[in-house]
Image (cartoon, rainbow, N blue to C red; front, side, top):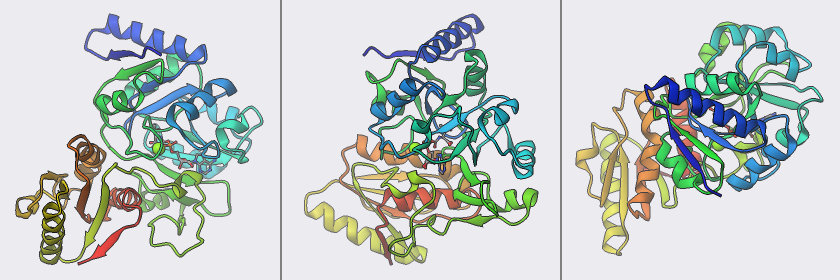
Length: 351
Ligand code: TXA
Ligand code: MG
């Protein structure tokens, strides 16, 4: 399949054509990747069973892993959900459009194929202008997972989408203004108490400021006991992972630096290519083939923004082992560490 790649530019006449073409592809059952404020999404008509099935094929995604439905207007809530409760309305007023996904009881109109057979549906109203305009001009609800091959780091740049999806989907809308860098916060509103199933830019504190008590799915931070099953089906798979073997090293800065350097030198001596992922403050202190600074230690948002691009760049440079510092879990940092721990397949060394 030939993939059309179109870049958003300041030329409004050209952009109008891009949205029209992308809308037509979506309405006729095709796949279009587009930027959002969190990561790039891979979109299809959410209510078209055959179209959404193509998403699973293009990504190599397990069919029991449900998709998020992207909307542009609040009216859509009542079309998709049979129980738009007061929590949903309050959270929508506070955080939509934006990086928050709500799980609500679904209506029959939502096909089982996109909910993995669950009785709930995940709904998000993105704030990114390209995403919002695409949903509006196409006039449909867009089911969209992150636009990566299943298991790989989510794409935050058009080049990542092209790397994973060129030849597999109909169109890619390129616009490298993806800001946040990690996927939306998912909150389940279908139970007795709101529960965070996936951390993101919208934190527990921000949510509970609006709806009171909010729990966190115990499966989230990865320090789970054997047998804990995450409620968001997608959170149980190895995810966000580079091809290289990723290891997180935790401890005081001095010990972490010493430990990473000794591991790195060991592997380099054995003939492997080694990468180190670190904060700006310490990256000069490492010995490795490839060293990536992901942002300042005190700037969780900066680390979130750079995380997936950094993981992908190690693969692009043929690294076989990556040693990473661990980062702050304040604010969006909780989401960063959640993704990093999963990307490492829970391999954490205490220095
Ligand atoms: O920021 C985002 O949310 C991005 C952009 C493109 O909007 N999308 C995204 O989609 O991250 P995806 O498919 O990569 O992740 C969706 C997650 C999966 O872990 C899935 O299991 C969970 O949402 N999910 C979807 N529907 C659900 C439901 N009804 N109940 C529980 N979890 C659900
Ligand atoms: Mg994903």
